[in-house]
Image (cartoon, rainbow, N blue to C red; front, side):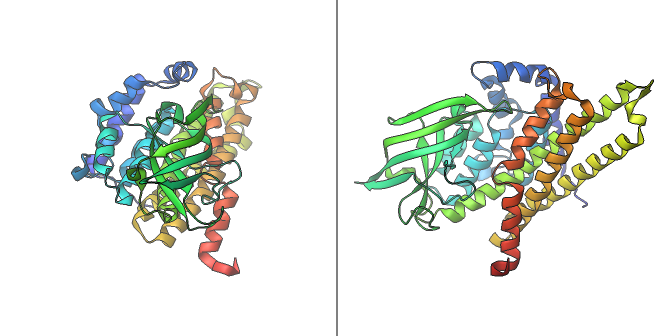
Length: 381
């Protein structure tokens, strides 16, 4: 696939890459992951003020730089190379996506906070029984006067320990698994009745179990149409999948490069293992998987602006290819490194862990393969 970036997009890539190379090396990231906070607020502020990338994907009318999904793709790939912990996906891609597509009355104010680095958002959508069925919801938001009362439990809310706000899916009508009756709310995390249990994830991020116990929400917390939020959720998750694909490309590049470097240094029988033909073939296969992931990510990102079915098919096709690449490249990187590949001191193991998490994020390979088949062949699938 021939894909040329504009001068502005290339400048964004170079700026982010230079900053991360200078200030976000592997040892710095290890210290961030092992710190009590689990992220660096000063880096987040630098993303906002020094680099300006938190506004790169928003229109100029909303206080951004006039970019879009391609800018998110560029930034997420660089973040993948550095294994950046800070919550760009949840805040800019997902939180910003809900603001851009919902017609939310307070969108301009929320985006202003995102661009300034003062508003951070986590997406509370997953529930223990739901798997990848986004409308399978036990969390409820019942009308109470002019507002709502929110009750329920959201699982593995990535970035919630850092968040000032939560985007929450809840049922305002219908049965537990109905497509109708799903609503989306922007919730201030400091509201009474919100209880969180924070914990680290295997890839170094932080997440929370979030419990809502009779949380009173004002009427203006509702994002989009009451009971008609599922199409909006699907659109924003598709955009998140494309962005995560770009992050995966960055992770896969580092896995491949790190394995090549190691194979040139590691010697057996008096020669570098990079000279062994079987390992050369293996590393070529890793490179092919990487390049296929790049092409599919670019295609999915381009098709985000198309109709619902075309967008969803492109995203699911990309997620299948990316998930398989994460598994193949990650496992072979560890196998070639041997047991030391999983040690905390070696970067390759951290990239492998992130690749493994990405493989199942927002839907596994099997889930997206079934989704693609359903969209392509309908009931015949």
